[in-house]
Length: 537
Image (cartoon, rainbow, N blue to C red):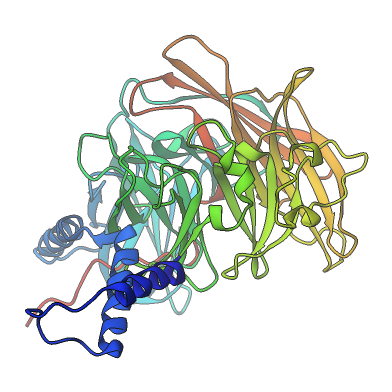
């Protein structure tokens, strides 16, 4: 695009004649440099992320108040400083802080309703000043928490504390454990994220043990290095335009906050459907092209440290013109989901029934999974990338694609899980299917699939590789203004259902069905609390 604009500008300049009363002419080099700078500025204005200084300032003010309160007293392990929901957005979390006379490690246990729903956390270092994140509390009750401090000689001291929490809103999500096999999952939660609503975590008994009360969209990413989350929230309290990206930890502290805008889109979700973290630490976000009326057909790469847009992809420059030229409506492609495979991206394109592998940042399509009969003849040769699918039941509406770890000890193959919302003139169903792509042979094979008990209202699939579990979310048909979502956990070896949950609530402008699911510990091993600072002398 930049080359084309530059060529047009140079042609216009060449055709202009000088006027007698003009200012002194710029040299050709100065003109070219000015034009290039103007074009670069224009492109940078297409997509912008600006730091939300007010949000970050409010966090600093809370940390300052915590420091003042903490240092106003001498807090010990048997008389600790306790602050429930310190930032006003994580009601089932708290800070516990105290000093010890000698370096110690701290272990705490939140007592669960059953032995295997108790949650234990251990600090990693011996310290004299302790900043402990308490997570996994029950709502609307007095929680028993056992604090244990251990010195370097192995000597222990214990103290039981009580932490009281408020009830959740009366109309908050309710969870019903429909099926549960007795699999020990201590210290893990199933995190669920609605299309619009709060992020919350459920233990395997069906009790809610974690909530981030920020109303956010389906965008949800876990930063493995820190245990923080990336969420897409509203810029203000109106909950109408979701244009704020935040990095937030389980106790509710916000570390980064960016307000997003683009000049050619005025809808309520300028960012949509998916966000992933790349190996270089940058964030990849799905958005809308900023050239014409089409939408859901672009993505941007953001330097997460400073919010700079370092790359953008308009898929109209990747796929043949015929795909969007004859499509009815603005949403010709609908990029719905993206995952990483080596140095490439695996992407699902919902409205064209396509799953494709694309090199990045070169943006060259390497292979395509789609139906030959739907592919346009005017394709500039890209149709040669379509894999052979003889005897394979292909997805009709691939809502999500998840790249699996190596399944066959063959570096030339890729296995993917696809949530397929199949709908045709003769059949309609939802299923999860595992495909194996033989990249050297340009063909695809169906390995396994599972159809029940999914429903035809969209959904998502997630693979938890530590225990070889497949998680599937789907919406269920329900009464007007009432939403019911289904979460099924499958054993990958035999598609055996190991757990199933039904999640319900009243539907309103700020709440919708469950879309994403993620299984992980309540706290990452790498999560660090860094609130207290050394007091000034």
